[in-house]
Length: 348
Image 1 (cartoon, rainbow, N blue to C red):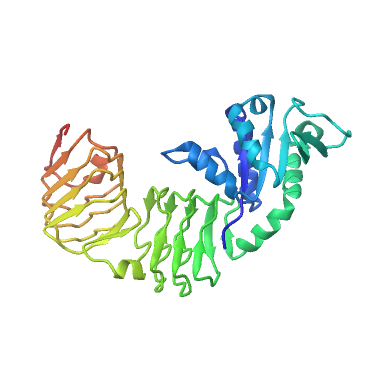
Image 2 (image 1 turned 90 degrees about the vertical axis):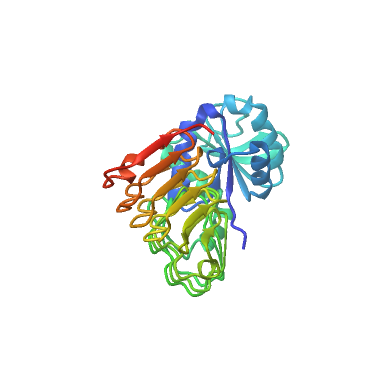
């Protein structure tokens, strides 16, 4: 089942209000997408794809938005689907009746709108907007009924469903530790594009999990997040879940490539003597290479942005770290109990 969501169109000048609206929607379990979820690459293509697939639309309707050529193009794609304008001023709108939520004309569409200044508080206006979205919202409630979420709707605390395909919905940003641990039904997993953090043992023991996609937005992955799954057990050497390295077999030299994130404790106690992290790696998790007692040399790529605490803790044989750029944030704490170590910064 494809998850349904609201597309939010707005001007950058109304970002503060739009962020508050998104927080309210998330708290009320309304799935949404807006330009705050854009990733690197072709922005126009990403927005176009989300416009086409959206089930409903919210237009944060201010003068600056309605004068925007980008917003006007987005509105053209909204015709024929549920559209609820959140009206911040009277620009381009012609009032029919003096009510807080009434019918307005926008282009060739007849639409229900919520006028902010007709409500005693911002939250009441947002509540009315959710009511108007109800025809679409009801099906989303069924889609996410098996999820237990934190109050802000951005952290997934648990999943108790029995579907073979599990899709983590927008706007979830964090998956709590052990959230899906031990689930025997999940065979394929789609990580939502807003997910940034996967907690310790989040999917551990999901013994039938053999396929994971959508890991592009993940910036941190906890220890043992995918332990005991088919996707881990089927791989040798360096074990990758998407672009996240979660483990690997002992080897004299660990060459970690096609990777963006190294999970917490991913190579704890590995018997390697040398580690080469290839270009593209951005984050090394906490204790990622802790207790690699034979480790002598590490090569860090220019792409590295941050190293987690104790990443090389108890690697007492480590005597050389070569940075192919500037030494990354966190390097000192990563090596905090190693007394003699030579760090070289170089441009390649």
